[in-house]
Structure formats: C-alpha cells, structure tokens
Length: 127
Figure 1 (cartoon, helix red, strand yellow):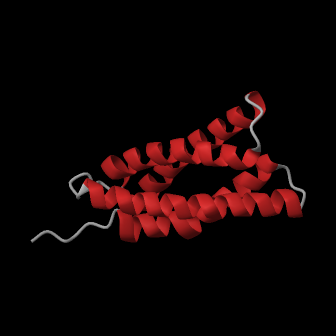
Figure 2 (cartoon, rainbow, N blue to C red):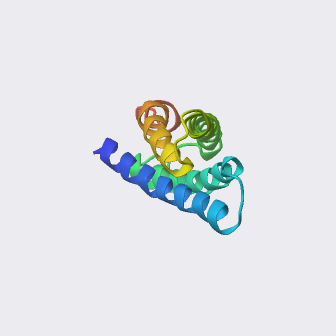
Figure 3 (cartoon, rainbow, N blue to C red):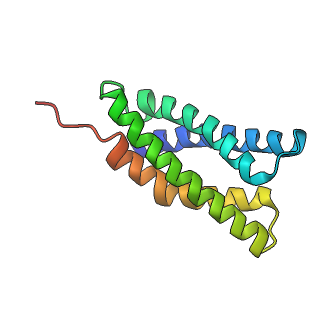
C-alpha cells in the first residue's frame, strides 16, 4: 500500500510541477530550464505535504530532519530532471514537454521513490 500511496502523492505533485512549468513557458514566455525549477518547487511542496501525512504516514517524525532530507532529494531530483530534459530536448531534438515527461518518469521511480521510502520518510521502529 505504501508504494501505491507514494505513487499517488508523486502523481499529484508531478502534475502540479508539470502544469506550473507549462504556464511559466507558454503563458509567461520563460525558458523551459528555469520553468522546470519553478514547477519543481511547487510540486515538491505538494508532494512533501501529501507524502508526510498520508503516503508514508510519517508526520510524527522530526520535521526539521525529515524536511532537510526531502530538500536534498528534491534538489538531486531537480538536477537529474533538468539535465535529462535538456539532453533530450537539445541533443535528441525532442519537444521539451515530452522530454520532461520521459525524464520525470525515470527519475520518479529510479531516484525519488527509493530515497523517500528508505531515507526521508523511514520510520524508526517503536520501542
């Protein structure tokens, strides 16, 4: 169940991230690279909130330590997503919207979930 809840939380955060990125690029004329960062910031806050309280049920853990870990994972995720999107967009000439979706899927499963499950939201056994 944790995996499914975490994926739902990531999906909500990811959709928010993607929509905000599109708004920044398509409506405000921002280049897609900084727009990825803006969208990622919003998506991360949404994902963290849902993950902490519902997906991993880790709202009893120390929030400072947990949020610091989450911020580090989010920063790593941002770097990977930005780099992957840039390489696919500029190198393979794939539209940035498609490149972002492809990169997000790989990073979400291969990086984010693993670190969130086993490091950020890892719960210490009760004594």
